[in-house]
Length: 379
Image (cartoon, rainbow, N blue to C red; front, top):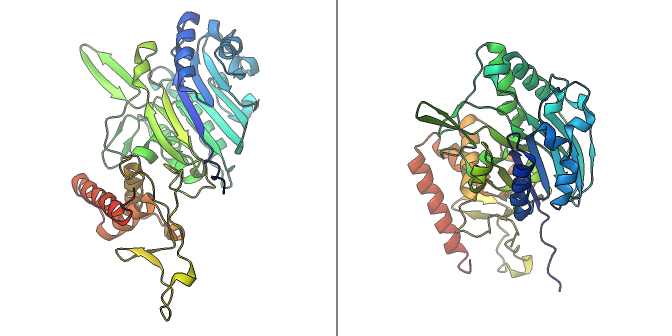
């Protein structure tokens, strides 16, 4: 019997390269190549580099490449733009995909990946301190395009959003907006697109409560760390790892964000997911006269436990916290409860206990990991 094929993977890196010189861009691309991404999205690719972006990207192993200046419908003057590169062929969508100012600060494409077509969008939201009205209109254009009721199965939105201002440990997001329209436009993208199957991949994987950042503002000896760079992605892409690559911080004023997706039909707990699924007990193994029972853990009924992953891995903590936060927010997950995942386990306990301290929630997560190890001694 042959081993099953491993779940497909998609590695995406999004990076604001800060208008690099051609020499510095070469160094940045060398670093990216070592990470072996499938798709690269670059923001603030400077004018000089933009004229050679396709050549430079191909020199560094990315067969397919494009830059927004090649397709612009507005006049970007002496400004930077967006680039995509991939090992897979892709088709660039028209600049009018987003009806907004500064269309050269966005690039959209459909990638022909082994898992099927992936719709991708990369953007650079201009800083509100200099381009307040433009930033608002850009947020509005992005939301109007992506707030679909029936979105494609696989899609992502990534880039430098110059937002949010802060995020609390319990997931409260504060934006920069100085008036109601600005606040609404900014929140619609940063928070609201989750209602249209574009969730924050970093928070989905890692939860809230850490000190993640991708940009540092310094002034008069003080510094403020901001998480401005994001990947929002479809649930069915199934983000399994997400991290900011601070080893490249000396090459740009922004840190690259790397997200690993392991698509599996949107079944949820992804794959630390090289799923070694728990085998279903055959009916003939049931003791005669004993009725078949739903499988359960501690009174939690489910049909299939797909948490059987490396219990020493901490990646599932973010999913557990995300599920708990959904319960506290009143989000319904009843239709997902036939499978036991770390997310809906967090949801179940969140429904039971409600708002709790981070310490108590962490203790419950650690207990669940210990219980999993005891139930599966071979792990």
